[in-house]
Amino acid sequence: MNAAEDAESALRIVNLADHRTARESQPALNTGGGDGTYGGMEARIASLEGKFDKIDAKLTAIGSDLSYLKGKMEGMPSSASVGELKGRVDGLPTTAKMAGLMAIAVAALTIITKWSDLVASIGLGKP
Picture 1 (cartoon, rainbow, N blue to C red):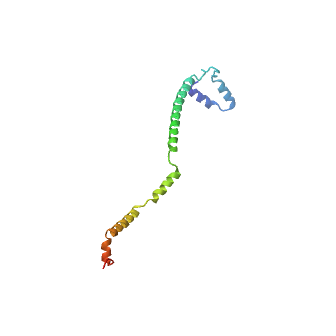
Picture 2: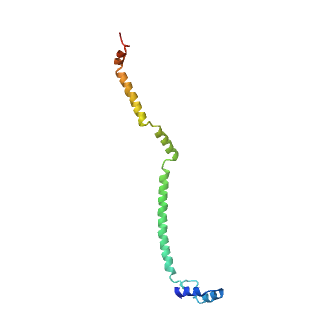
């Protein structure tokens, strides 16, 4: 029977009594050694086995890649150490703080180098 006859036979079955008759008209499958009405099964199984081997190889490659990534992740800093580093960076002086410190340093150096002139201009020096 071909596919068209199978479809036609399926459409003719309207009750269980007709089902038994339709089933008896189909050829029986051989048991045991195979090569029954599904003769192409060996080729299909061989194809599936070949495809499975390819999938297995890809899964093995993915597994090794995951192991590599896991090793890289273990070497990375933890969130606690990243948090500690962030706290240290936040504690560094900003540009405004550095500008203020530089202004104070320049003022102090100016006072030290011009001390004698300042004392003389205020009148605290020798009379």
